[in-house]
Image (tube, rainbow, N blue to C red; front, side):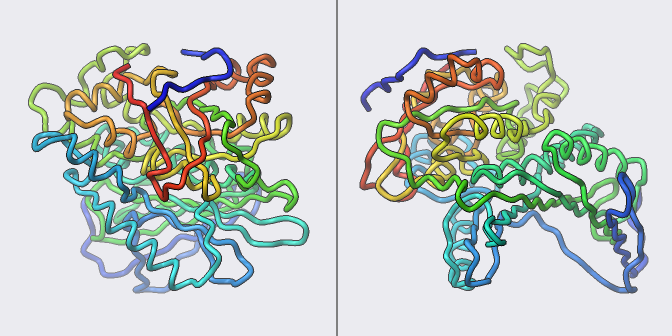
Length: 425
């Protein structure tokens, strides 16, 4: 691959009950900070099992969006091959990404809607679009249980949805949560909800309400599951849809706080299969002096403030939230056919947790970039002149941004539209 020609300098940087009844506690927004608890009818059951992410409606006028927490691609075979017989992959950690992608394809057929492949579902509403997204935090919850730390997992929950809907320019308006457990521990639940409130504050949106499901015998002692739903709006003439992107545009990346909320099945496998280190051990090279567990539990960065600042001042052509599927699956979702991207991984530094996982799991470069965000959790496509103006204005420094790649013309399809020049940095 030809070296990337960046048009500007790089900025671096308790027991489960045997009772058969189940109660759903409705939490409706009555007054600021209030929740209403109403028991549901006896015997009602609900299920939450961290399904692939999707945001959609079968309404024919709706621009629907479906996504999976990980995806299949041509990069998959390359990564598996490069990893060798001993190297770890997302699939070897128990996540069948091909099955997830197949489910998404089947759902698209069932809805028969106009599926954009973006990050949120769009619903026409007057001269605006309502934009909705839903997600969970996956097996990062297992770390919260193990380390008995529950006050930041709610930030992750909010981040995963609001970061999706802001990619089309939609400002988050409100958020709803679902908290499920076998036996309600009020103190633990309060800690989780406090994190959700914090995430909403960071996103300038309202925690409108939620639901607490107490289902005896369904979850292990001390465990729970979470899901969240965000709704925002954007004027139709201000929609960021990627259609104006052209070859030669620059990709500006916003740094991540770490692993965020994807790839934890693989990350946990790396740590838990080792007899040399554990979650409590110091993370080598971490500039904050954290343990492995602390670094992995670091909450997902919420990109709403940075995106709002850019949308209010610069011509942003496309945006992408880098989650499960990494660079290869997520970035093509923000571009029209005929365009792809070339990334140079030497242009930015990576949080120490990524080299730790890669080295100890013997994970191939391609597998790392199709599983994790690799230090860049959000991306914007802009003209080169706009990128230079952003740097000159101090946007890069204020919002921890860096040029990470460029847009290229391509006839390739799917994840083959993305090239990454790997770096051992």
